Image (tube, rainbow, N blue to C red):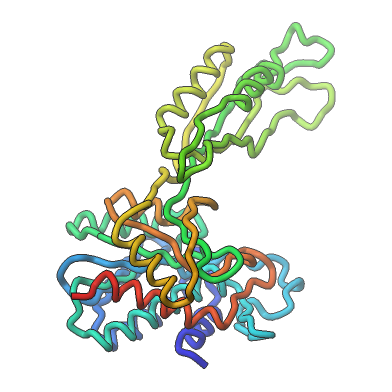
Length: 376
């Protein structure tokens, strides 16, 4: 059994629904400390974070990831115990196997091999590990970045071990992500009897034209790296449950996934101008999950592309698809950021699994990336 598979198994065997780390970061820190890494455990409220480094000079290369997982769902539908790693027909099953304990294991073993071969390497190798990525993401990576900024520590390159691959290992790397902006909208009306609409004001009817226009807007055309900005209504709620009462309020949740062609301010201003156009009595709150980021050139892209081609002989494809990741907190610091990990076919699903053969290969790719960036 390879070292990467052993470590993946140990991590999967630890039950870690957000924000419970359950000793994963201690396991990682203990391993890396044995070869000279210096750990800093950063706990913010109920979230454990690990910042651990080897070296003291620039440039700074960072592996980033998370130990927390989503819930398992109906456990009776699993073919294996989700918190006990099990190998069947070349796949390792368990919650977090793909997202993203295998990625963390591959990063750790890659760093171990590199440091053992190059104890006096150029630059600094670091890990930024959190237990708050699948949840609110308010006491995890974003707080660690604040800590680094306060201590004037600047990341040059960052590889997140998120499961980026589509059909086979390393066929896709994420070079950025769209921004995510949420709107929480309340439209006020006047409650009344449905038989006397003249004595009431139906907020659903009031909102109909606004919503029709909002869903018809072409926000931008996208660009070479991003698809056009999309707008989706995710929740609508109104009414008392009775069929003879006009509701007094309508609550709407909506989301923008937006490209670098459009800013947060432009989206907010456009929505509010349409609301005002229809003279609606409304309350609107905005919540930014993350701004878009993009690393479409630079030493990290070059090193990653070359490492993949050298280790497995394929030309990878660049993508900005998918949801948000903690890269949104790291990129604003000026770092080059990419995501490279295992196949994402089963992430967040019942019977989550990862191809065993991919684990050591991914670790070798990670090691090659370090080598290309930190070679003297």
